[in-house]
Image (cartoon, helix red, strand yellow):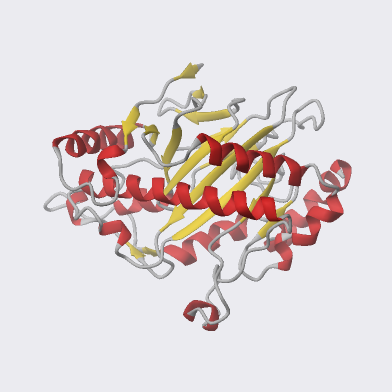
Length: 336
């Protein structure tokens, strides 16, 4: 079943826009949808079609390279979770933990210099990117990352208003972690799945929110509260935004971090660019005052943002999990 998600206009949440009736109305609609499925579309964002197309072209060129060239920037060579993740080396479905996902990615973050305080402290997730050496790739990456972050900041302002917080609340907590992931899902005709195997297994995202653009070929599926999977196609001029686990904890379950997955198309490759937005590494995530009724107790124990993120990576990535590494080796070899 295919559905159309509600569309939120982000123009009232541009930097410096100030309070308005339009912002209040869009925040109300966002709150309603975040209570329902945690997925929505956004219009009047900051990702131009030109920036998206340049990023897609750079991705297609990189993922078409021989395996040994891609492995030169393998994520296992990084001490801060940055670089190339090969086919079958991540497993996102908690219910099918041995089915390696049929996708390959480049995982990125901010480029931290050696003198950054968190790099000097040895904090995980802080350090340099591993990116393709092609200067056209780097230019496309820098451009796309900047406009995607600007869109995420608009969404965070809308969230703050919806939760009765100061508009800049989520942007004032410190250095937000922005992890842009560049994903290639090979067509099923080239890489047939085994039973229960998907391009991206059913999972919830981990952080505060995700901003997603793709190439328009479809494959994203979202679970309704009934358990039914629905197909979601992203119109060319819109982006998808969804919530992660930490937003669910922050709002005491008022907002939903919803399961979703990707089914690889049969005869065409799929490319997508999710920007994962996670609160600053040492932020304690606990129930917001506006989400706790008088006399109630928080439903979730407080967690720290960065350590929670790392715990999820440890359970899903082969290079951090010897059990997955051993199991998925045959699939990786077969694809190469």
